[in-house]
Amino acid sequence: MERSNIIKRKKHTGLKIFGFIILFLLVFAITLATAATIWYKNSITAVEAEKCSGESCKTISFIVEDGDATATVAKRLEEQGIIKSALAFRIYVMLEAKGSTIKTGNYDFSKDMSVAEIVKSLDEGVVAKTFRITFLPGATVASAKARLKEVGYEDVEIDAAFKKNYDHPLLKSRPAGAPLEGYIYPETYEFYTTATVEEVLERTFDEMYKVVKDNKLVDKYKASGFTLHQGITLASVVQSEAGIMNENDQRTVAQVFLTRLARKSVLGSDAIIAYRADQLNPNRDKTDTSYINTIECPWNSRKCAGLPPTPISNPGKTALLAVANPSKTDYYYFISGYDKDGKVKMYYARTEAEHQANIDKYCGDLCQKL
Image (cartoon, rainbow, N blue to C red; front, top):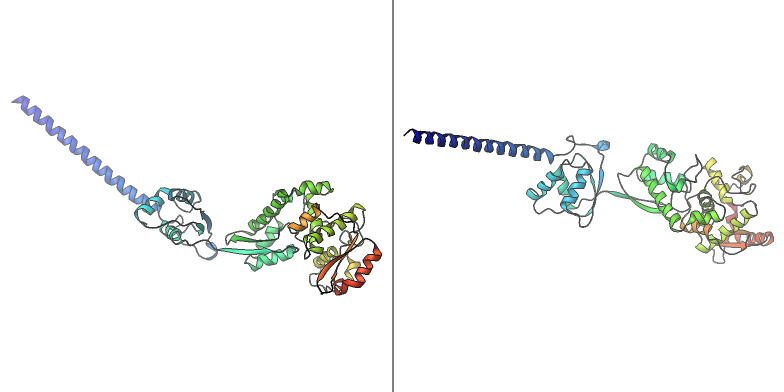
């Protein structure tokens, strides 16, 4: 009888302990589920709770490439600080955004966007806003600044970007304090609206440096006794004198200048004098050729030998290559003149007499502007 009571008490105690374990596990599960729910709901909210407006909205460019899985996109969103949790993002897509897809493209996201808003953008393919900007061959820094202002940048940020010291291989031989004249590679570019002026300029440096590397211009200019900066400077003069002509004309003009430099003669480029005149007086009368006499060395290429201190324009690819691979001709003079159809054409000469004859016959009003 006593043994039976002991067994009953043990069973009762065992059931009681089992009940406590079940209760504990239930409470733990509820607590865990509650905590997980709180974590999840918080994790799918925006990184920054307060909605931005106007200039306070700083967007982040985000690229979804073809074949990117949800997990990959989620991880990169978290790494870029656009969402709080990659795991929460994946759970949201799986449970609450069934049927949604993630489309490839370039997006602009801000940290005040919730996961729901981001997923909706990715599903709808609402891509980032971009703009295009074109820098022309033969244009100057002044022109580049004007183009940047036209696309929406402020004077303060433009000026700051042009004064900045850039650590770029293209600029290594550029003299300290020299302007960026000649280094804004002429091309049409596309940028996100979030791009800074510095990023725009660095992209132009990248494009020019690619031309430099692909064509081994550093070595080719060095063979002519030039640094990269000097080669670009001469290319800018070729661009300004023969930019509207064909590639062969640019190579022949480069040959004329290289011949003159080899003989330590003046370049005789009115484009150099005109550039300096424009710097001193941007609103000058371009038919006033008296500037030829007022511009001093080293900018007066009729009086002083050698290259100008800096480029005078932004040379295009053909002008850069023309300096590295000039024509095999032996001309010493050239002018821009008109052919019988009234089209502008280059005329070359070996002697001063031939050159003067070309001026008298072909130059017309082209020789009346500087």
